[in-house]
Length: 96
Image (cartoon, rainbow, N blue to C red; front, top):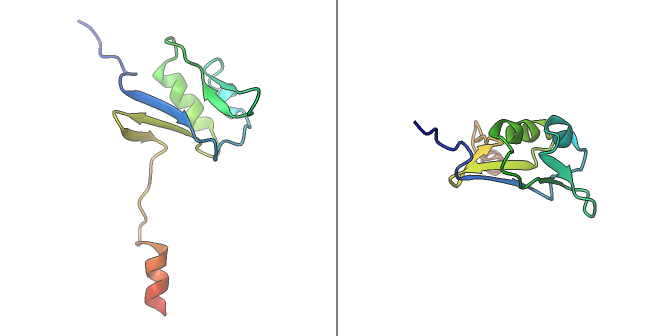
């Protein structure tokens, strides 16, 4: 029986505006994430041997959550949390 490919539909990207090049992803998942020599930003190594566990280990290690993991067009990590009490602008408008 064939096992489904856990990386099917998986898309990993690094937000260049959030990456601060501290290299924690490279230490959590050595050989999976590298720092680009020109930009200093993290990037995922394009290698078929990379596992889903390694991808998430590097993503979880990022202190700024710059590594975004999506599967089939839905964000898997980091999780987007909805506000508990509405939008801050709405609260400010009701007070005046």
